[in-house]
Length: 194
Image (tube, rainbow, N blue to C red):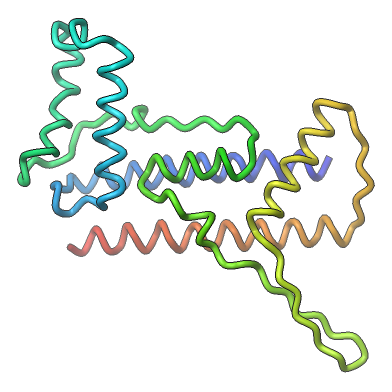
């Protein structure tokens, strides 16, 4: 049960952190020069994908889509301010694919390498005066928790997990959350000041 709860909370955090970040960015009404380059590319790519999925003829004849198309001004107009972009354009859903899905979420808001560039979690253990340092991959740990969740739900598995393992998963996922919060918060502060 703890694995299911931990997995659900983790997925909710990833979705909520990305949605809150994009909301702050849109509220800043940034110009092309002030937008993070990777986010700028994602915004434009999102609109191009929309044009392709709707078909150009329908897109240019519908007032709602014509209004949406203003975001493409970011390509050529250095003074165009990103505003009134529907936050739902960045609506994020997670399909329980572990860090692959999480990477997709953070890529969509301009952080394609957020998880792959994350340092391992390091834990120090002391036994009878001997200190050992053990590193755990945050990405691998998240994938392990998601895989355990999938096994429990889809194959009715009852994996043998110790209390210490669960405690370690909780600590590592907390570390992941703290690191993501720091990265997104730092970006918001930096963009707010410029």
